[in-house]
Length: 180
Image (cartoon, rainbow, N blue to C red):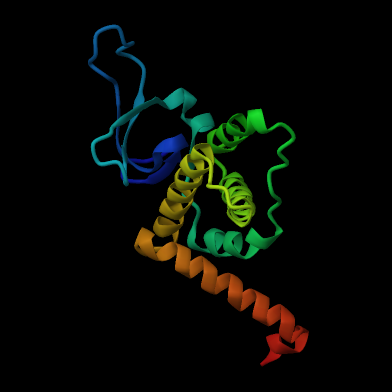
């Protein structure tokens, strides 16, 4: 069970604060059932009501700082989405987004980045579907990492890039560099 004031991740709403855990006084709703009242951090006009009993499957804790750092280091090893049928690409993206998993968000971002680069080289524009899901995946990933790393969301992309460049430079320098 999550606690009042805790940050959790909930689907496409991203990082939310557990505002309360209570019953709801709404007609047609079981008044004995407990709900998490969630306030998304980056969607100020939204409130989400999640039954506590289903919270274990639809909510998860925000990554800790160490988990976030380890995750960033793992990004180069995360594979792309294998798109077999172009007509099902949005379904693939939606499935990744619903997983509530940072690795899946990175798969979406990396896949779309590669597709966009190819299309631009061929003189074509990015597709509307790719643009939409790139932004959604990036917003959700950066939102969570901002909370985990205690930094503004706008700085997360640059931070990830620096960390990945540092990791690549250390690998090129060889194992001896770790001793310096």
